Length: 179
Image (cartoon, one colour):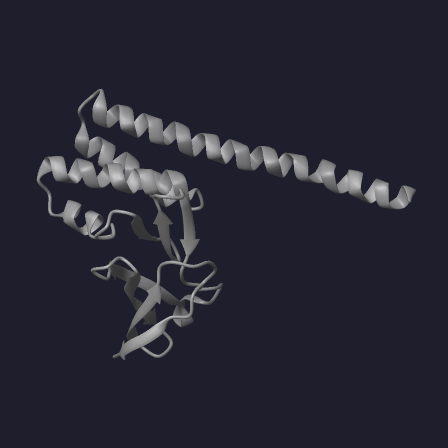
């Protein structure tokens, strides 16, 4: 009994610094986002804000909520500048406006109605020469499915895959084309 309590106590004490680190990373991401929003709205420096949003997306990929906000704000900046890049970013928003697809090492979809994100692909740790990863995506007209390109470097091919957006967990993709 005492041994189990001791192990539980030690495990809890070891987890405290990790929890503090994660909270610190969350706060850094939010501070960076607020600074970029200030650059955009207060200073009116849209190009500077775009660079800050890009940095946030690169550095804080695991913080999906901040990443999605940075993507949307970056698209708005491009749109206000009259840049075609806005269409590429807005193209990742579903036709019904409910979802946003985005890529880190994997493909994700953010559901604005539930404020949650769902991982759609699993690349896994692999040597670069054998990497498989998503490259670009597009929603179906009814916003229920997402098509994406899947690079299979070991075989030197691309696949066009489709997954259902609703549901939970990583869905099984249907391969439409392999080239």
